[in-house]
Image (tube, rainbow, N blue to C red; front, side, top):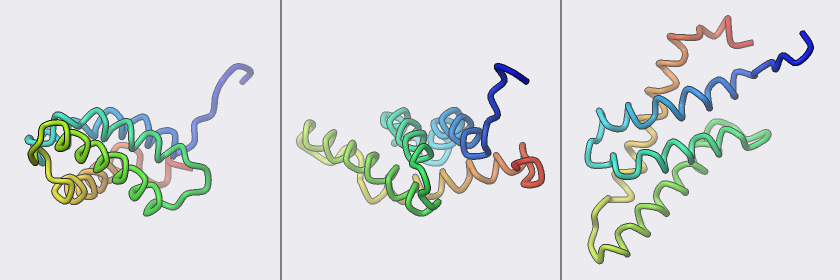
Length: 111
């Protein structure tokens, strides 16, 4: 086993979330696609927070994503992406990604 890295369920989640989030976001809210990569990175960053609960991680990712929407809106001088819509969609998207991950890796395999 030397040289082999054991990945935790959270590491697996972060990898899958980073891949699946932009896809899920594009289907659930196509108008939010411009920030999909930021959302994916925010989820990855949140997953790396040691000892954080699921709700803490979602709040962290949401803050990064909505701050990005606020900056984009400010730069454009108009509301391009509603931070509230982004926050709500992010919560739904993360929930969907978790559901997909649980289908791929049933909880019995996530130990």
